[in-house]
Length: 236
Ligand code: DX5
Ligand code: ZN
Image 1: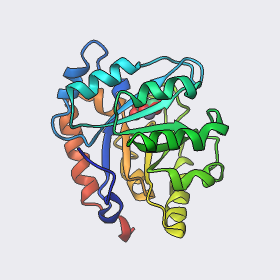
Image 2: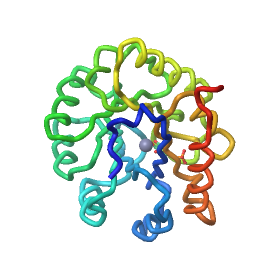
Image 3: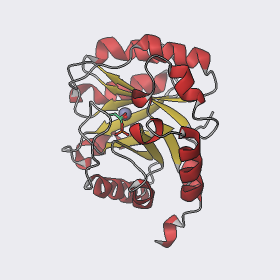
Image 4: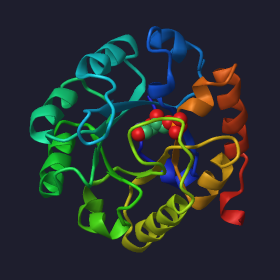
């Protein structure tokens, strides 16, 4: 399992393929096609209300944990009604659960604390129009901040370039206040912008269609893993 501890110190960039773009009739086959070249498995949960789409259920999260006991399972909740649904996802024992700042904002502290108390890493996500300042008061509770670089709901969209400014802002805040969160980016990542994402300061990069629509997902991941790890990020 790849833990989030000590990742900031060596600035190793992690790759998290998004199962939203995997083969729905053969998720296991899709995961096997990644070989050993993925770091985290990103699982998007959509409720048809917070976003205009539906995706996986707690049963999928539970089956994933059962089949891959050592995998770092990165659950991204794009849902309302956290008070009902969050306990159901906690119970499936993922490695990390990300909730959205825009969803029932008054519950943010309580929900992050609930995740933490269960021994699961915490993530907080921002949709493209939401500024970083909206989550300043909860940053100390976050193991990860996820910047959505497309409107959440669907894979295969075009990355919104201003997302990188938010990543840079989070890097500065982390430095200024000695926070420990990782910065993750999600949406529209492809071979043309993945290096820029790392240079902006992302620690974890989610990619769905770029990975699974490729003829050889394993090779795609290997290629960019090497490129990212050889990047002189501080030299830019
Ligand atoms: C979108 C999801 C993403 C999605 C990314 O709401 O959160 O994780 O799978 O897909 P791509 O990489 O195709 O933009
Ligand atoms: Zn996602």
